[in-house]
Length: 279
Image (cartoon, rainbow, N blue to C red):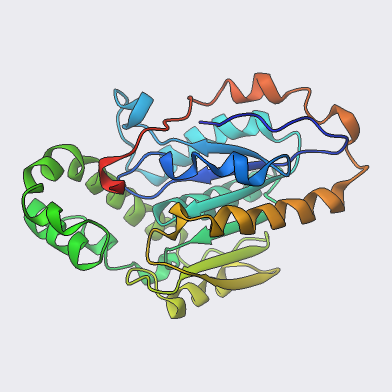
């Protein structure tokens, strides 16, 4: 679940853990390391049931997911890190932050959430988790979360190859909302809204302000629900990581990378192929 390693520097290189949207893999993060350079080391976190983890059972239970992520990430908490989650991934990143804080472990220096309303709002797409296949596909097209062909010539392909994973991910999203509604974190939180996103409009993203007891920022980016595929998000995260590195200079020194190789072996390799749901 990582791309190429960032070069070792004289100061600590933060991790950037990235969580993908529903029904997808991690191809949206494939070019991020090149954009972030040595400001952070990108670690895309692939959920089970897709890509190299296709033979593993998908997780729809919030507690089970947190147990898995805690096991994966705890060995890497020897240096500062950032979390970014897009859509479903935003709910995952928020829940993970809260879990790590509750466990007394090192929390992220910044939690960045894109394209998903906070848990108490339960967005329209999550509420479609129990719709029949044809109605769910029509909803995806209406929300611009699927191309028009998904409801036409490609409908059977989507029913076979996309909808099963997507439906389980939506169930996971519902479970995360139930557990974490109104649960604030002590970590600074930034919410990113796509200017033309029909699933997570700006006014709903603004309500993430109630989920951080420290600092909250709301920013808009060009694009619809999948603005994560453009360069705006990694460019913004590069600035966040650079600010973090500068604030930490001298605190960790040149030993920051000594556990890097062993730690990342715990994480499955990156799936850099395009997902059907991302076409």
